[in-house]
Structures are given as C-alpha cells and as structure tokens.
Image 1 (cartoon, each protein chain N blue to C red):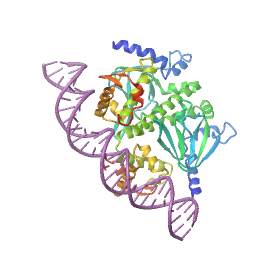
Image 2 (cartoon, helix red, strand yellow):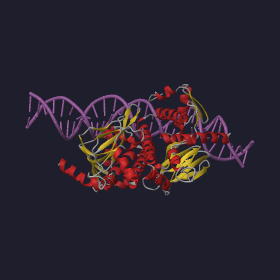
Image 3 (cartoon, each protein chain N blue to C red):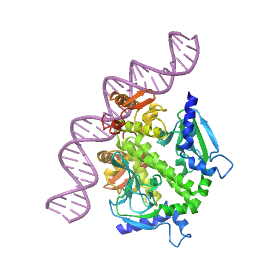
Image 4 (cartoon, rainbow over the protein chains, first blue to last red):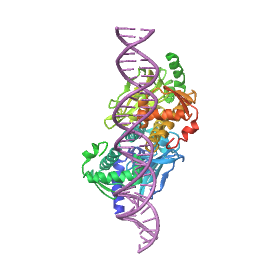
Length: 235
Length: 235
DNA sequence: CGCCTCATTGAACTCCGTCAAACCGTGTGG
DNA sequence: CCACACGGTTTGACGGAGTTCAATGAGGCG
C-alpha cells in the first residue's frame, strides 16, 4: 500500500518534475542518465539540510512530502510544503549557505543535484539557466503571495485558501482535485498559516459543519471550493 | 536640498548596486557604457510596473525609494521597500508577467535592463548568470524571513524588527546607522507589517516613551537597538 | 492494555482592529 | 497674512477574533 503509493508518486515525479529540464539537458552530455548524482531516502522527521549548513546541492522531491523552515527570531517557521516534483534549496543560491532547513514529513525520496553540476549545465545550456531563473522567480512570487496572505487574510480565509491551494497543487500532479491527504500535523499547518493548532482545529470543524469539506483525520474532501474561496472574514 | 540628497544617493548607487556586475560585464562587450538601456525618472506615486503587465525588464533603483506590491485577494499588499541599489522585478522571471507592481514613494530614478539584455549577458558571462541566481536566492530568503516574521512575531516585535532592519540596510549604503528617514506613509508601514496605522502609531509613541527611539514625523533615530531587538511580546 | 502523541472542544483572557475624534503640517485662495 | 481645507498622524474607548490555559477524546505502537 505504502509501496504502491510511492510508485504512483514516482510516475508523475519525472514527467512533471520542476527539475526535468536539467535532467534532459544532462542526458546527451554525459554517460549518466540525468543531472541527478544521487538519490536520498528520508524517513519521517529526517533533516534534508539544516539552516546554517553549507549549501552545495539543490533537491527535487521524487516521492513523499517535505516542509521547509525559515529561521524567525531564534525559532523556526514553516514557509512551504513540498510535493513530488517540487524543488528545495533554491534560497541558498544567495549566501552559499542554507538560510533555512528542510525536513521530511513522511518517508520520502529526493533527487540531489550538486550546485557545481547545476552551474555547469546552466553555463552550457542557456535554456537550463533560464529555467532555473524561472523556478526562482516563481518561488519568489509564491512566497510573496504567502506573505501577503499572512498579512491580510483572517484565520478562516487563510485556512480556506490553504485547502484550496493544496487541492490545486495535488490535482496539477494528476490526482483527484477534491480529495487529498494532509501529510503534516495540525501544528505544522498552524505554523505555516501563522495560527495556533486550536484555531486550525476549530475552523476545520466549522468548515465541516457548513458542509464545505469533510475531514477524517488527515484525509480531506472538498465539497464546495467556491464557498472556500469566497470565505468571508468571519464565517 | 532635494537635489543634493538625490546626488548623494546616486554616489552610492553604482558602487553598491546589486546590478553592478551586469553593467561591468556589458562595458567591454558593446559601445554602451553599461547594461542599462534607459533610465526612468519617477514622481511620487508613479507606477514603475503594474501587476499583470508584460514583463520585459528588470530595474535597479538609482535614487529615491519604491515599494513593491503583491496581489492579495483582490487587493494589494506591500511586500518590500526598495532603497538605492536594490533590484525590482525579479519575481517576473517566472510567468513572464509581473505578478506584482512597483510604485515610487518619492521622486526616484531607476535603471532599466531588458530581460533580453540580461539573458544575453547571462549566456555570455557565467558569472553574470551566477550573480542573477544569487540575487534571486537572496531575495527569496529575505521574503521567506518576512513571511516568518508576519506569522510569528507580535505587533511590537514586527515594528521593532522593521526599524532595526531599515537602519541596517541604510547603514550598509554608507549612511548613519542610527538615524534615517522613513520615506513611506504610516499606512504603508502598517500594510507591510500586517498591522493598522493606529497600531503602528501607538507603538512608535510607546517605543519613544521607553527611550528606545526618537520620532519626529518621518525622521527616526535609534537610541537602543539592543532593546528593539530583544523587544518582548508585549512591551 | 497502557502509554504517548496528536487532535478536539470549552472557557477566560488579551492583543489588536475598529470606530471616532482631535491634532498637525502643508498648500491654497481670499 | 490669515482662514480654511485636506491628507496624514496621533490618541482614546470599545469590542471581537484569536490566543492561552485546561481538560477530554482518539489513534498508534510497544
């Protein structure tokens, strides 16, 4: 069951992977099959890279889920959740050091590409360089949108937007658009949204009572995405 | 007076400009003096680029101050303030369209570099491509840090951190490290920090009452940066 | 089964937003 | 020059959204 799920994830991983152009560019260049130098398997809770550590690689999620954390006044804060096909470690392009860290939410597998490799591929293939810039630009735009949401949206609006966003990203990978699993704890959702676990829990039951969603543990089904999107300041 | 201030800004602009490597790379390549194709003067309130418009340039602030805005549920939200030497428009590398907009806070001047130009310079000079990646990576890291601050810090902590950050960036450009001008309105500070004007105003007087800062209109002097950094949840 | 972590629910509190009024600096026109 | 208007800022009083504290319920695993 778990193995089958991982296999299914892998199927979409390479086709829709954000790193695919790098791998394709690398194929005719060297004997290796792709730009990926090694794959790493991660157990739940295992750290892929830690804040402050030297950055010499970027990563593509091949299977499973991860979270990335940014330092915030001594503590750390969840800044994004990574699905298969997503990329981690781009923010380390700046100071050559990881500003934040990445941790597996469940048994996962990532493809590692060394920065040297990425750099030489970029230098050899302009379209790879452009692709990396696009990736960075997209991630920057989405992080800005997240900051805007934290600053301006009420708690119900934030949670509703989060659920809709999860469904969208999940369906973009070829899965059901109205049914998905939240692989992270409530605590991590709350952290990501700048709320507390209690508020998240209360709002989920609120949404369920209104018939907008079904929640069973970490399984979520969306019944009325429209209502979630229009979620007013106080539901 | 205004002219003198602008002149002073320009002096640091090129030496410390984030775009400098592009200009230096372009010099021996073509007859032009730099990578900059045109300079644009902006009046207070003038829009440099708008969300949804086609992106074909990036910009370096040469003089004055700007704000960048991200769309947030119909409205817009201030995601950063740009000082001379800062760069705007990188988030458009993704969708080839400006996700957000940029507006001048006061009479300003920016250097415009077309994306085509940036691209060809990147392809010709690997170190320019690496520099662009660094810029994007840095901006990504700082936007993540801002999101973390919005999610986790109390109102006083956010404002204190903002003041300290302004002082740091201002001093990095060679100016006084304890004395600067806030060129934006209270409304824009509040927007950036996810607060209201009233809260910002109240906290500024609070900080002043504690002797941590002096405030006279938009002029700010920091007396106790240490206290600001340690600013507890309720001051 | 017993223990642990995670999740849910309830009640009291509080920070901060909302509403409202006063204040101030600047420009404008009589 | 003064009166006035106007946008931005400050200050006060109040209420509510969301946190905090606390207790209970529900799975997961040895």
